[in-house]
Image: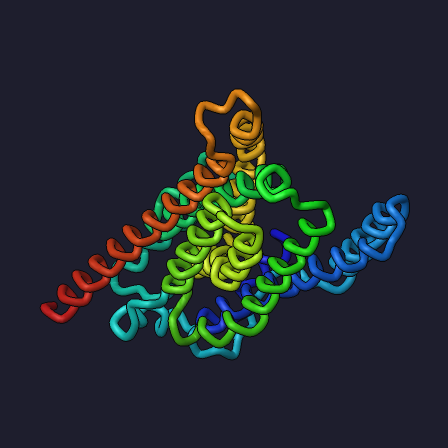
Length: 330
């Protein structure tokens, strides 16, 4: 998917959040279709069909998807002069900038050849409040999300006796909610609210989603909790949009790849942390009777991401107002 995210510079900043939402929505639609298809296939055929579809996707990517080159965008927001003045017109969009735009948008040093070093990529992510915040939010939210995925099936079986079919139905509800959110809701709200507000709303929905799983008191509560994915589905497209707007066209692949790498790191740490924790609280030697404790811990990870997003938005709003005042005084 990272190679697809690098094409974001072909879309104007004002429409980029909706574009990321559509891409994520198509991915969710593929998840729903795959889950439904697997229920009608024999177990021995499932992996063969999945491998064949993956090969078709790779061939399509190689043949039909062009490399990101010269940006051809008819959106007037692609004009860097308009981007530089957007801070005074709207503080709800991460594209908002001012005369200090160069400080908020780091650039990699010119490369004479070869790949950028790890130190250059680290400098790219840490040289801006927006990019460092996006990386931190991605890590904590991904850690909580993968912690939930690690523990959920075992927790639901132990707490409510869910079977694999019931768990598959829950995944279908979650996938359909994410598809609906990203294909319909996000393209409507993104131009109105901006990706920063959508990110905060999505993280709040993600916290609610995970905490409801952890404190579920009845059989139907997990199904109700899955509905909050309509909000939490905003998170990754909003982060991708924010990152895309804060780097140059030739840095899209590096920046989006770094975000994917951070998410992958969290996907490795999640099972390592939450698998033994889940097993401990589902065993007979648990320190206290709370089967959903590991899921609650995953919820606290998403809560940390939500708090960081609020602090970053507050800091960016203060910097934007200060820059506007200085510009008016000058």
